[in-house]
Amino acid sequence: MNLSTQYDVISQNICTVYNPLVADMYVKREYNRQNPTLCQDVLVIEANFSDKVMDYDAYSEKLAELLMSLPSIKQQVEGHIGLIDRVDIKTH
Image (cartoon, rainbow, N blue to C red; front, side, top):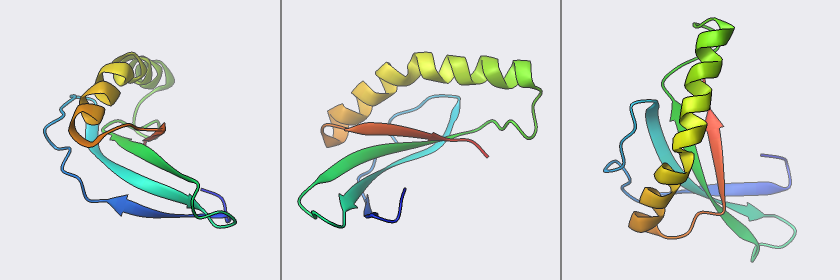
């Protein structure tokens, strides 16, 4: 997120969507400060694996698997809360 945006976390319950590679997920609404009518609903996926703990090959394999699951995850979330404009993935 850059300095020209602000966001609100949308408190929609999406815990019914499950993937073994996902530790947590939530939707945030990101606003543009110059034009508050422009906003995006962003699905934030927090992965349950980390490049700090795993070697490069194992991390790359898990990340590739998560990316391949992304269309299904996004479709399930959109079925619960509506359209998603963007997906962000966080690893720790």
